[in-house]
Image 1: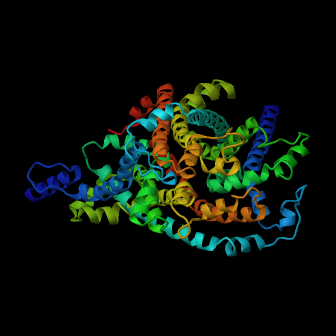
Image 2: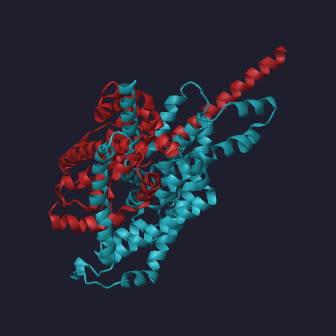
Length: 317
Length: 282
């Protein structure tokens, strides 16, 4: 009994990581396991961020020979009156809102469709997943080729359906719509797979009860399916919002931010300031402003969607 | 009674038919561009920009030859493989250890970890690219594969920690406790008991962070110039000039995307669990 008890308490103490009680030796295991990751993140991740804040307070611009004299908040003050910045932030917000909403609706419809266990659907579902795996640069290449007004596949297909050829990059609104279309194409599968998994995980009894009661499919969807899917939809949307705000690769390849800055999303504008004009001090300040903007968008969404309620429900004890 | 049964069966047939039509439409929407680019990559220059588009032609590997020989895509491919493999392994090792620690021990402040991980995700890459650009030049690691390895491992770490923690929590503590009572040390339990039980999770996470590192462009383009270029960078450079070479860039797109597609589709079963656990449970 004695040996058993002391082994049990030793195991118990090691398991809970708690000090105190008969075994006085500190269990270093959690520290040893956690330390490498923490040190790594601090050195490689945290330190550059701190450095970035410092740079944003200087006028560092190697292209113009400015070597980083400390100028305090000047960069941020100038940013406030930078119309280009606000334009790009506005585009970022609009783009995020539209692409997430559109792909969410499409993803839900797809999930409902592919939830059916029909033969061959597994293969079809697998094919639908591919767009989100393709390198974003490649996605840009693909669609830029397809959207070519004179020789592109897309206008050819439209001609088949009797629709006039579209100037995909010709006008400002067309370019924005084109870029939206590509993003929806690329990322709907991501939302689709998450929502499908959520659908699969729903309990069957409410649906069976509704079927017995003779409820129509539409009512079942809006009154049962959708409310039960809400947590999954919100989390998926949040993940997508965070990524959509930072979209860069695909838009860069397709329009370079044009025409006439119609698709000049924040990330593209920032890249230009930093690595075309090498205005790194100012550019650093802008990047922090962009982060702040994303945070605001996320906070707004979290508030509006009731995300925090969902998280506290799911927190393991 | 009989009429009812038949009409129910007919209704089911119609529903299934409609479902198939819709499913095929969806597949067409998502797959057609991919099919088209694969087709374009084996077309000659004349065929690729022909209008109306040609469907039947003599396939040629000239584009791929040009890609690998003229554009040095071979070096870029090797760079990508080297950089992404090592950074993925690094992230998996550090991240899984940390995830185990967070899952099994009560540590001060661990509840805020999930929130911290989420906020790291919100960071636009450009915020870190600028200081890393400057630091890398000063340290002399600019344009070396080691720089990208270190950065990609960092990018993947939070995801590994977040998702593996959930998988490890799913392994019952009693199994580990039993082993420990039998005399196993803590690290032994981790390596020989816990890890084998979370292999599906490891596979899913590995494939996902591999994919994100492989497809990464911003860091790669800003922090390399001639030696350490990865595939996306070379491909993007191929279309810088105003007139984009369709055949060449199609071949580049195919070469870039094929490895990940093959990898992910073969690990598909594990992936759905991995992605959704990260999103739904995390």
